[in-house]
Structures are given as C-alpha cells and as structure tokens.
Length: 135
Image: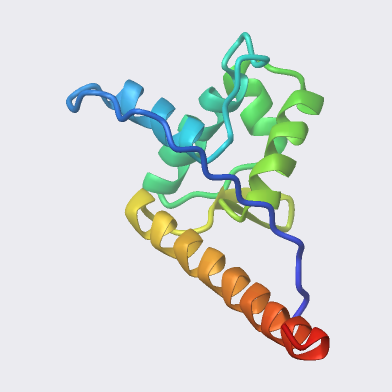
C-alpha cells in the first residue's frame, strides 16, 4: 500500500439556512478549506459540483473533460484536482477523477476516519515523547 500525504483543513463557520443547495455546497467546501476568496471565478466550486454530477452518473472524468465542460484551462483544472486529491476528497484512476465515495455524507464519514487515525498517531507519538522526557 502506498501512503499518500493527506492535508485536511476544517474551518468552523456559521451554517447556512437550509433549503438552498448551492449555499449548502459552498458552506461544505468552505468548511473543508477548499474554497476561498482568491478564487474569484469560483472555479474550484464549479469543478467540485461537476465531480458530484459525474459521481451521481457513476462516471469518472478526465481533466480535459472537466476543462471543456467548465470553460477553464486544463492547468487550472489540474491545480484544483491536485488540491482535492491532497485532501482525500477525490481519487484518480488512469487519469480519470471521481469523488472518493459515492455520496457526500459517506465522504464526510471517511474524512472523519482519516482525521481520527491522524489524531491517534499524534497521541501515540506524544505519549512516547512524554515517556522519553518523563513528563
């Protein structure tokens, strides 16, 4: 098994009012540290939505297809895909990309497991350091 470094950012922000799926998706992405004010064209948000649509259809998608659908450069798409890969939200197989799991609720459950594993590792190392330093 190849371990890939994973970077997950969690930002606690006020929840939107329920009922507007676009606001809820933006909140989800902001809370996961994906979307920020520098992305003036909301290109990462649009890419995220396109990946959700592809997942619902059961299809993985290439960076070229994403660039074409979203009217973005392939470089911009690859940049955003790398961010999503690094966070563990997206997986790739033979240059095709998809959300890690089929729905968003399970995605959050999987990220929770990733975070717990990381915190367990940190706790174990902290315990070992405390023993070595006799704290």
